[in-house]
Length: 206
Image (cartoon, rainbow, N blue to C red; front, side, top):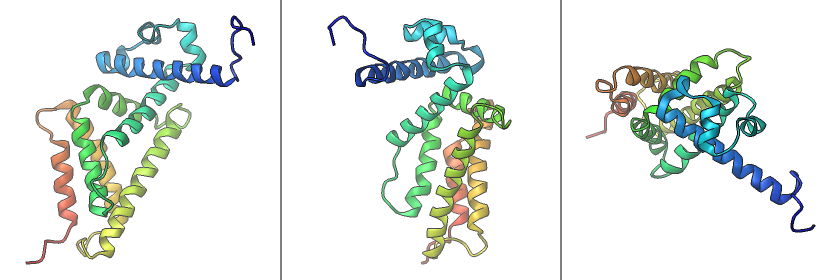
């Protein structure tokens, strides 16, 4: 290949360049959403922030919803990288989600975006519907597995149904985000989740 010939999109160099461009767009979108929120953002502004044309952005993300979904997927990846369970115990697994709530209390723009898109994505034809369906299923299963292990260790109260408690935990996480966005100074997301977990556990033996 001559030095002046462009690399084909399917070549290793072309693929790497395309992936880097896609990541740049997602980073720009996350920054714009954090600045002005979901409704205040436009694809043209995001393209400008990423340093590409509007048409160039549409090559990677044909609509706003597709880009929002990519931002949410990036959010999950960053959460996993920044907040990890302290150990492999089931209690640490549940505490991991409490720590995520504490982490999110410093990310107003991203929480706002998540809540708005989650509500819109209830519709089956919404581009983010499959993302949220998989997200909730995975999170419920994660919590259920941890609670079942705690139950096997005799750490849960006898009246606790692990499956129902897992669903309630995830519902509480998302509901708290809505209340926190409305009244951030009055709602301690991590504190309330921590209190809920304590209600599921047996009192330590003397």
